[in-house]
Length: 157
View 1: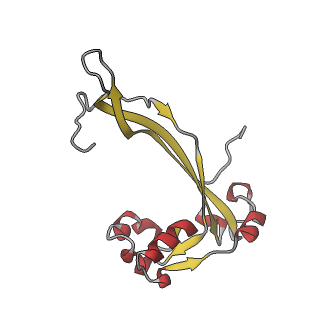
View 2: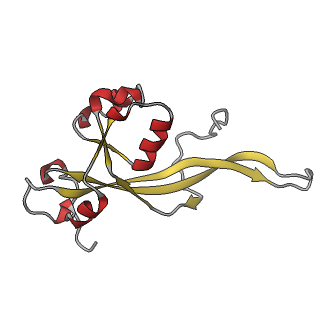
View 3: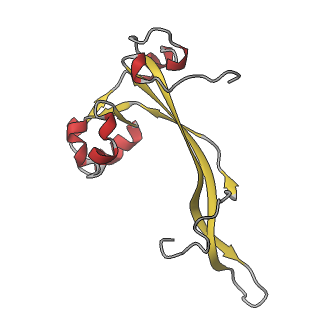
């Protein structure tokens, strides 16, 4: 897909396919000082979040299989304990722990090759890139409400 060029790169694109939202429960903290073992880009990309980087248990299993040292990861409170925590958007006290939610929506991204059909060719041929839209919701534990000030429930939600 890297070789395919857009004819009009400044055009505002609409996704051809809207994929369902995905809820991700981030239940493991990453030790920022040792995070370079996961990716050399971690320190640049996550510089503002030096004390709070999260991942999922499934991702930890993958990295451990790749030989990453387990000291990079720290378990957070177990799911049942977190389930009892209120959402940060519903907390009044900024000093208490809560379950924080961060939403991310990708309005347009290339998700697969597009194949076209014609009368001249007996088999379908590559003719472009199919575009998709996807949204994610990341839930994670924070020890203080003040670490999750963006998690506000808008009226009517």
